[in-house]
Image (cartoon, rainbow over all chains, first blue to last red; front, side):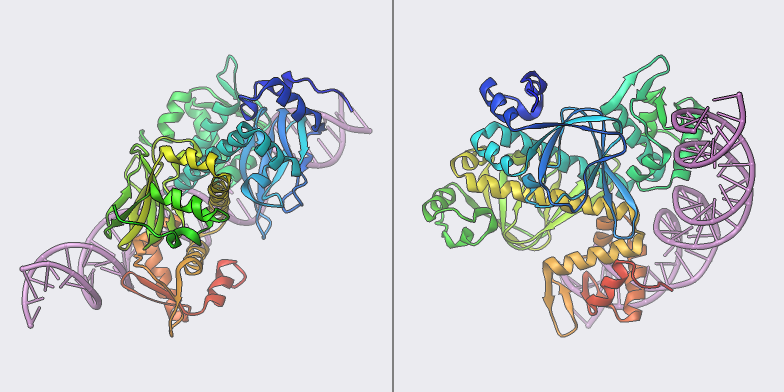
Length: 234
Length: 234
DNA sequence: CCGCTTCATTGCGCTATCGCAAATGCAGGG
DNA sequence: CCCTGCATTTGCGATAGCGCAATGAAGCGG
């Protein structure tokens, strides 16, 4: 087993406020895994044997409906927890997690979660805070889906992605992992066709610049106006 | 201040596994409030000064969008926590809570929440479990809104209401609090018109029986088939 | 018991968005 | 460097569901 350095996790919110020794204890029971692009970290409904922290790459969390449709619940960026089924009182994963790029994760056996949480109250607090934040995010999404039409929903989704994973280029803010029209559709409850049409229209207006599996927001401010419905749509 | 009896809260999930003395301590700092129908327990964006448990009645949790539209996030039934902003790391309420019927709640000052959670780990665990459950509920809702069309969404919403608050009558399962077409529309992201049309159609087919601010599901099984899309719609 | 207010129903036209299908283009593998 | 497969674009209907408006019920207060 390879040695893991404390600095790997020292800065992460999930471990904020923990002592160096605690970090070492925690790391001692972690495995580090390399997850190849397009393979899964865990699968929906599978026994939740581990929980994870993403160290590098991007992970897509996906729910599959009984009739085979997919919904992208969220994207995970480095430093975030995933697969914390235990923290919400489940024994199976409620969704699948797929590596969008090659990834590195740390994994712990599920049963350690409650040990960590009781032994290091800060750790428990931090993961609960994560759950709380996600609850708010998802609720916001429900409100959007209930009240906004597709164009504004897609605009909001792009802005969130940019905020989370935007990399500044000379063109504007690039979403720095591969994302298809289909992916955006699955985040917003629409079809790839509609997303494609919207992106084309926006490109026409100079708001974005997009290509195969990539999107750059060139004028975030104008896109934001559109997302908030504070602008006439022709 | 009136004495509150331990039996009020002894059976509630939020206080499961706590000792009798603990219950008494906790109750000692609670105020009991009567909330009149159609008045609010707390308002969105207001400073979260208290958290609550509903003892009797029904409460509607509502989010208001910047442009004045409403979305009903959930209905609270007796025994459930509400206003637990602190548990998700907020200092203001993320939504408003309105009494749907005359209600009785217990209220505690917010600052006591973290005290309770540390002094009685079971209490913390239980509320976190509540947050986790709600996260799952809301995620299910997102998936529904993204993949199902209105008819199935409304069917699912009714079934959830019946499951949560159904009272058996000779007609079928009555949702035992006043609920308008508008309310159902705000739960499902549609309009009162569409809900009205659906209920009329379903009444025609004998699935439900509905009137002014009330709905009875007469054939839950058939409605479930419809909700799950396992039935042809004509 | 009457009048008012709130809730519900329903017809009708409209449009946002879907669904299908065909065409084009890009990118990596051999 | 060409081939193959996936991603994307775009036209063209079809339609689910919205929005408006008018009408009808039902309950509440006086």
